[in-house]
Image (cartoon, rainbow over all chains, first blue to last red; front, side, top):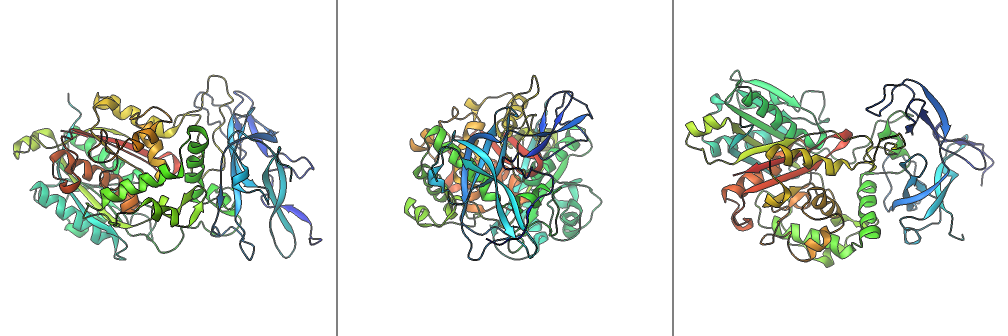
Length: 146
Length: 395
C-alpha cells in the first residue's frame, strides 16, 4: 500500500471516521431523510418545508438485493489493470426507510450474499491518483468471517 | 362522453443495427401506417413525435423533423420527451388534440438510431449528477436489472432456468415477427452459455439497443366511422403517471430510493402504479386482458411486469411462465411480438412499437404469432427520471 493520503472520492458524502457514516439531510418538518443531501426543498408531497438538518445515516442495514460487475464499467469509473469483478449491494436502512446502493467490500463474492443479511458501512479505496488514494463507502457483511 | 380514439393505421421500420439516419426509419414507418390507414398525408393535421436526448442538438429528434421529411403541409407539430415512455406521451398529446375537437387525424411517430459504444456521462468531477456518481462507483444499467432479478430469486424462489425460459419463449415469438431484429430461436443452453454480465443476468438475459421506427395513424371515432373503419381498434387508456412518494424501488440512475420515514408515507413501487390508472380509465380489469406487451429490459423484469399488471399475484409470475400461460396459445400471452429480447430498445419508438403489435393482434393480422380471439391488450414500460406508461387498446 502506498503512503498517499486517504481522501474521500466524493467530498461531503460520508465521514472519514473509523466507524464511518453516510451524510444525509433530514427535513425538520416531516422527518424525511435525503441521501445525497437535499436542503432546498422537501420531496414529500405533503410538506413544503425549507428547513433541513445535516444528519449521519445509520451505518448498518440489511441487504435488499445484490449483484456484481463482471465487466469493466465505462468512465468515470477508474478501473484497476487488470479489471477485477466486484460485488454491489442495495441496502435497506431501517430508521431512514430507504435503500442505498454501494459496492461490497473487496473479497466478498455474490455467492456469499443473501437478501436480509446484516451489513455495516466501511471505507475502502475506489481508485488511486498521483496524489491520493480516493476512498468510498462500501458495505461489509457483518456475519462473514473474512 | 367517450375518451376513446381509433387506431386507423400502424407501421414500423424493421428493428436492427442499420446505421442510417433515424429520419429514414420514421418516414418508412409513417408511410406504412398511412397506407395501412388509407389516409392521405395531406389529411393529417397533427404530427406528434417521441423524442430522445442524443443525435446532436435539441429538437433534432422531433415531430417537426418527421413533418418536414414527409413534406411540410401545414400540420401542427408536437414533440414529447419522456425517456422510454416518449411514444406514449406523444400518443397522449394526439389523443388530447383529437378529443378537444382540434383535429380529426394525427400521426404519432418515433424513431431512433443507436449511437455506437457506451452511453457514458460527461467527464470531470460532477457529484451533483446522479448519472456521473453511479458510473464513478461502477454501477451500470445492468446493475439495476440484476438487483431486481436477484431479489426475485431470494424472495420468491425464481431460478436461472425461469429467466432463461422467458428468453426462450420471447425468441420463439420473435422468430415469427418479420420486424424483429433477432429472429433465431434460442434454447436454455444458449442462454446458460452466454457470458455473465451482472449476476444473475447473462448477456442473453439483457436487451440490446437498436435502430428502429414506429408510427400510428389515430383519429376521432367519428372520422373512423366516416372512412368505414368503425371497427378499428381503439385506444381505451393511456397512463403516464409519475411515481408516488415514497418511491421504494431503487431506479436508474439514482444511488438511493426516497425515504418513507415521514408520518403517513408508505413506500410504493412505480411499476405497479402505472397500470392502475390505465385500468381505471378503460373501465376494465386485469381479468379482461387478452395479451400484454411489457418492457423486458431483462428476462427477469418481464416477470416483475406480469405482477405489476396484476396478471399474476406478487411472486407468482414464474408459475404462470412454467405452466406455459405466457406463451402464444397460453392463457395470457406476454410479448407476442418477441419483446425487447427480439427487438432491442429504440427508445422513442419502443412504446409505439408495443401499440403497433396490439393493433395487429386485435385485428387478427399478426400471422404466425396471432393470439387467437384477442380483444384487449395492455402495454407497460418505464424509463429514466420517473417516466413510464401503460396503454390499453381494445376492439
